[in-house]
Amino acid sequence: MAKKRKSLSEAVDKELKSKFNLNSFKDKKGLASNVKFKSQDWIPLSPAFQEVTSIPGIPMGHIVLLRGHSDTGKTTALLEAAVSAQKRGILPVFIVTEMKWSWEHAKMMGFDFNEIIDEETGEVVDYQGQFIYVDRETINTIEDVAAFVLDLIDEQKSGNLPYDLLFLWDSIGSVPCEMSVKSNKNNNEWNAGAMSTQFGNNVNQRITLSRKESSKYTNTLVCVNKVWAAKPVVPMGQPKLMNKGGFAMWFDATFVVTFGNIADSGTSKLKAIKDGKQVEFAKRTNLQIDKNHINGIQSRGRIIMTPHGFITDTDKDLKKYKESQVEEWRHVLGGGDFNIIEENSDTSQVEVSISEPE
Image (cartoon, rainbow, N blue to C red; front, side, top):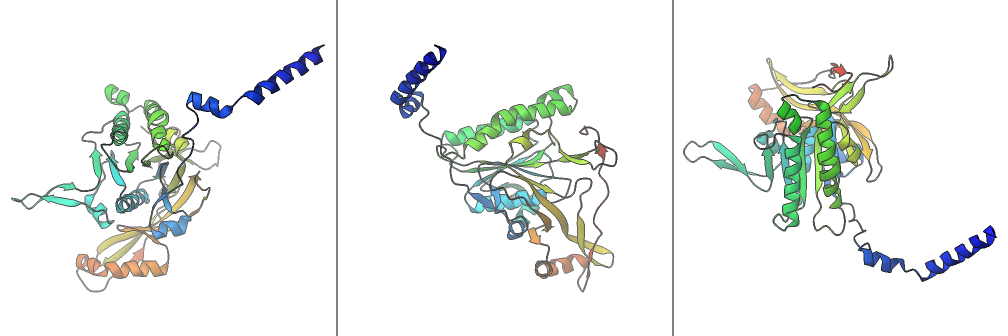
């Protein structure tokens, strides 16, 4: 009898499915459209970056992390992205919370802007151009950063900001959350929680949704992420590179580039020297694609970062760069010939901690 009831039930189910129209159901529930994503486009970085990584540059519509210890190439990559975006008609939006920004460096990298000159003093008083810039004058917490990004996306959606946006945040880990500010205590757990709530549950979703065909514009978020080295979990083990601000952004990021080493910067300085004077004109650094959910390519190599961008670590490119800068170096060093030296790799250990330093 049980077998007979089961057969009857299966027959009824089959009959219902034969009359059911899934497309009609989707139409009724508003589920019939908006499922297609745009073809993947990229904001190109320098030929040197492309050669070393086999990656075109920054994937549009994604969360991208540039992480590593101090002075290892993160800002060079960020500025290359800004210059490239500007040339493509994408609006760079700088969110500078670490306050190491240099307009002179941006200009050397090829970023286009106008200097506003005081007619009486002849001094530069401001900078204008095809970009948006904010810093700690108005952005003081993680919540401020999130609110700023969401406000521009809302203005874009309302038709008041007709550009694809490239958000460039320098850097995660340099600004606390509101609770830390109010308590006058930089609590890493609170900061990580704010990053998860404000970005993991909100901002990051708005960024990646712009990849859909239903979105008129495509927005990208590139973040410099400060790091720290965690003590090995076992004796004689290796330290682990950890992101400041928690791992909410790591989980949401589809593309992560790590510069330098884990326990040290791993860079070596290239200098022009004469009579005790010197010009540090480049650094060799390591870089590695640690996470790539776009095309799966993961690579590592060495590259040379200069004040003008990346060049390949080859004698040919290094000679070409030296020739382009020789007159400038002679001016600084007092004319005449000079020597080119390379310092040994910087292997001075960074502080290794059990938990994220305050």
